Amino acid sequence: MSNYLIAISQTKGAGAATIHDSKSKLKVKAFDVVQPTFKPRKGEVSFFVTAGKKILAFETQGYKKHRQLLILQMISWYCMYLGLFEAQIHATFPGLA
Image 1 (cartoon, rainbow, N blue to C red):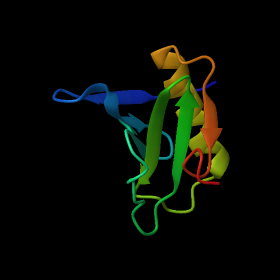
Image 2 (image 1 turned 60 degrees about the horizontal axis):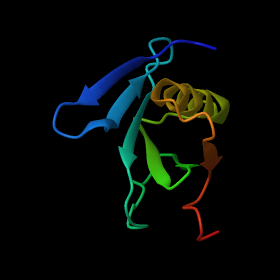
Image 3 (image 1 turned 120 degrees about the vertical axis):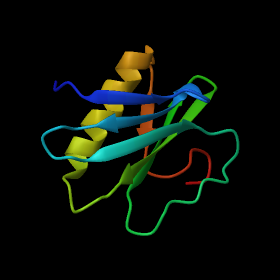
């Protein structure tokens, strides 16, 4: 598994971070979700992660037809970094699909 760079928000902690892939220059933003009010930006790809009662949302920044597998690897790597080993990745908001 590749290593990625993480930029953590000083005001929101590890729940709000940006994951950077230095090879492809892709950025994936991660943040805590309390309600299903997250609206993905046009042209970007989003995923959701559930781990117990915790829900995280992920959205690409500057998506330019990167492979979806790369995005999923970055999300998986970040979940391992947070210690969310039971994390499940969803393409839509959990409970709405």
